[in-house]
Length: 464
Ligand code: F0G
Image 1 (cartoon, helix red, strand yellow):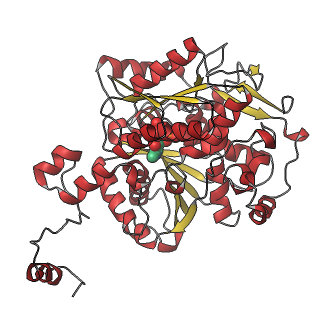
Image 2 (cartoon, helix red, strand yellow; image 1 turned 180 degrees about the horizontal axis):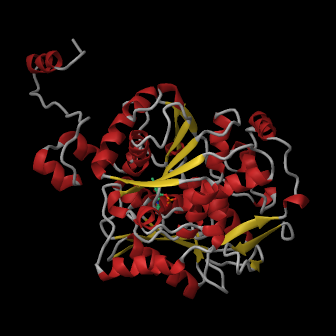
Image 3 (cartoon, protein in one colour; image 1 turned 120 degrees about the horizontal axis):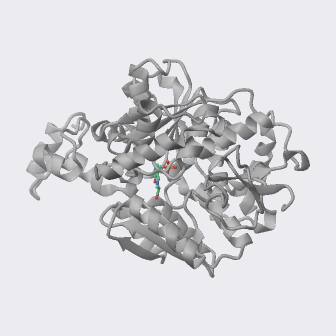
């Protein structure tokens, strides 16, 4: 594969190439992010996306079962023997009419792409299939990440499944949802809780990886984003290979949005799709760097010549004001998204928009999504809250087909869900910082006697 795939700086004025086997986090010349690039002319690219349906018949083969590697001709940096999989990507694209109605959208036009079905309960497993494949190719023995929780769960599980790889995960103190912490511990990762938040953990893990030669698993790693492209392929597959009008995704470290943009750049170049969906990246209001930089400061990718000074000035202001990310959607509680530049590129390629929404809107949307039978964590519900906002503004038309990516399972963050459904007033504010639970479903406490139980049943709607 060495001559048909390489790493390359995304800055068009640099565009330095690096060998596939180098372990880098950024361009050594200019410090920009790196892409994995391919010489498609030398690679066996299928003539149409229907080709991949053939893999459904051979699911007994783990790389055909994988929701990432069954699209391996579109992620061709490794040989089949090198591919690492834990069975990721068995996900679901499902209509949710009640959720669409809540968001003011046509009932038949909203699809939820449920990434909570992954082995570790989040979309991160897609990316880890890519990054662990590369880690294996370069012989990495120790891997590390900073995480708001899901990355650490996925890294820990993949490392446990690859005998001989040790995982180290850096998390912010008190910043991780319980389901995610329990995963990292149970899968056996060395779990380092630093006295700081995700942005601090991300800075420290980069220092440690560089100085100690530890393989970095965060989405700075371009091989991770190669795996995450598969989410776009599976949405296409669910829609019989017809692109939706919109993709909506939460924005945290901005790896997903970056990967989605690259997937569509390539699909268009390869002539495998005829049009590109629009992209909506949704921030939590308390962690709104992308929205501020894109909508308020007005920075654009500008074919790679984006205004880096304006971005630096934005961060200096954050630092000067001592501003820290804060949201109930702890997965996206990030103020320094490492993939900002690639996300700006994706917003250009996919004619994107970005919005910020309140924690109140996130938690209400999450409860509505759950009433469709799909449970997601708060960050994932930002997509539906974002759709509601973009429908109210008229940016998304009522009959446009929308695919919202639900990034993580609701059992990841039970504390937020339980607080929403069981607390009121000041207790609710203290627990998760929102004022009311419009869709709260309070547990009913009764004495251990049949009359009290029957009274409770009679007083509840639609039971007796
Ligand atoms: N949704 C969930 C459930 C996440 O865990 C994350 C990121 C995002 C959305 C944001 O995705 O970074 O691609 O923009 N979680 C990371 C982690 C940061 O450490 O688990 P992004």
